[in-house]
Image 1 (tube, rainbow, N blue to C red):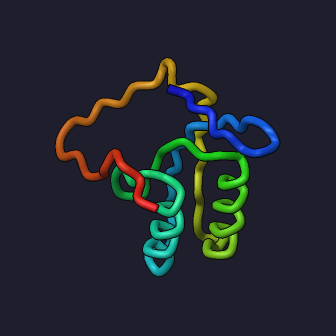
Image 2 (cartoon, rainbow, N blue to C red):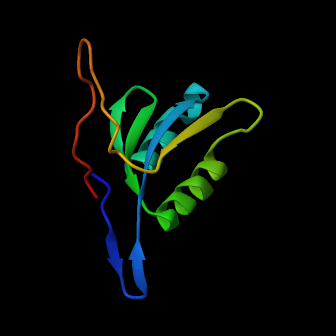
Amino acid sequence: MLRKISISKGLVTPVFVIIVYDVNQKRVAKVLKTCRKYLHWVQNSVLEGDISDASLKKLKIELNRIINKEEDSVIFYYLRTTKYYSREVIGLKKGGDDIII
């Protein structure tokens, strides 16, 4: 389910990313709001979705301005293809499958 996004100078292949974060409670809302601009919220502290290289760079810059590197952590898992990807939810499904921009 890897998609190509057409750009005037060629094709850009987005990467599928899963982000997991553990940040101080004072910064949770800001981190979540920032990540939701680019990815789908799955559940507490977890987001996923396709993202272009340019958007990924923007997201990382924004997160670096928010987090305290001495207290907080943000982990990025990169999947170059979703061909072998599947997700199973046991219990309450908290997030949505749609991204709203």
